[in-house]
Image: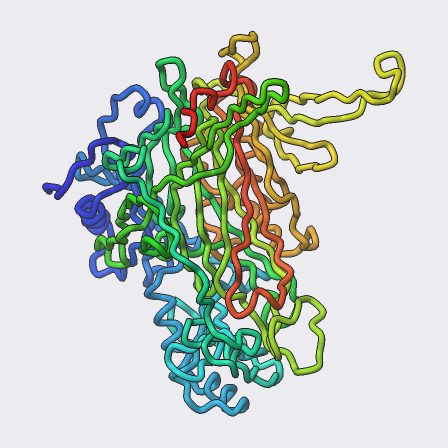
Length: 639
């Protein structure tokens, strides 16, 4: 088979022709006439040593298939170079991620079910076409949900008044469906009591805001005093994009994209004294875990693994300048697969641009009045994903001082519930009349395959602590920073501690700076909230990664996800707990650093009807990696 395209670099994502060729190879291995769904088709990344050595010989694809008639999942690796199947693992103990086709068919089928229709009629609803049925994952709450028992969903319902209406303004509280995805039929409809549908609209378009009856606190409609803000780079941006290779202000990297993770960064390095020094080999979001803290029948099953149960690729937005990004923009398209193994393009899936980031450094000599200051820029590499009601905006920021920042912004519409007027929710907060937002959390698990000046790295926990009063601290004012080596995986499961200004330091013990110190980077943790679940709750057993802010594991190219390969309906124990149980040594080793941070959401009235952006994230900062301030050479501003 002749492929339509060949990539210029072994880490480039699969092209459209490669995706369809990989599907053809896998299809030949399937039983004749089998009902095959292609869940994901991605690049099987070559071994790290081959990529770094420039000797990659085989272009491969990693495929997840769902054999519907056999209720089986297949993990396959195929060689595009040799037109052959490399490995074929058939599993009946797992459930593949959910596909768009399944979700759409679920919604259509639920709305034709007589039991569901009767429950809607009890609420005075006759026009079922305007209902929104969101197919929530089943999760795992006991043996009935086990993957070998079948593939299921737990859809929830909302109601629109007209096409284009924000249906999330009217939750149909207490109505829960169990849906069999193997048979594509409703198994059970549970009605836990009728709560009146909220009456107020929740629309937020410019037209809706112009109507005082909807928003009396905006009597004049949209603001009219916002003047144009233009970001102009008359000579073009300072970065260069060549295919997926990106260079900017001494930074170099490759931008990737996968069906499950979405945006991925590869081979991130910084040019210093004439050579490019590696920092991170691969950086990606490995999982999002969104557990809800409301025990009511409609909400207690809400504990979603957005990457492992769906995948970010299918929900990735096509971005627009002036709306999603602003400035001198360059875009990268992405290509994923549909259920039939055909290539599907996402135009403008990744946005790349520069931003002014304030002062880089400044000092005024008060004796002479001389002022030296420089402004900082950052490079922004971003993508935006819509998962049902929520928007997740992902930003990798590279700074001229060698820092790396990962930021997630959350917006969209809360996953809400209806409440009888006059009642106060016990496990949520009122957002609008008759509408409440259940308490919930968003945990983000990021995987950082570190490579500071080479693969031999070590990780230390750094705590600032007072020195006991005595000979070493006669005045009671001394404190020190204590470093604790995380020498094995059993020791490298850690929790943040703001009282000790705790951070973690990644070092290369074999490489020294001008002061004779090992070169290093700090990981400054993000928000340190932990899950609010009971330790034995089913949901947290599936998301043990979220109970620690830091995990360090030995590099294994097959250990990519904090919750394992198939968290859908999985009872738990996979992913990081399984990886770390090997208790591999970590000192001066090829290590992967995993960081978990949280957006802890207690809903406010200001979150309605669409949420202002919430921001969470973390930072990697050089600590001894350079011999001084790497931003010292920034040009002086011209007035």
